[in-house]
Image 1 (cartoon, one colour):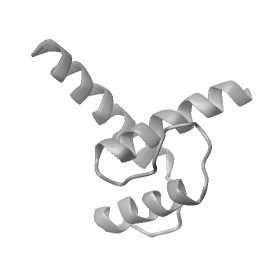
Image 2 (cartoon, helix red, strand yellow; image 1 turned 90 degrees about the vertical axis):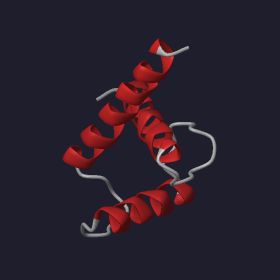
Image 3 (cartoon, helix red, strand yellow; image 1 turned 120 degrees about the vertical axis):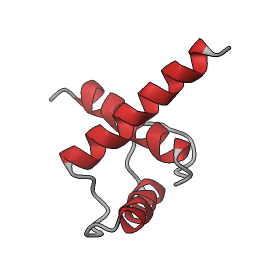
Length: 77
């Protein structure tokens, strides 16, 4: 996967974490210590194994839901 594509995915993950209240700061596409801490908090909240790295299922679920909510919000403006 290209670096730019990976960074976009990371940014989407960070945006989703921020949306759900697991604050990473600015969504910049870099998975630093704040992002890993937020992922761990998210995993604890979900009751899954805490390792600081999202599984593909966790990533898909959180990012998809965020996009859905953003779309619903834009429809109500």
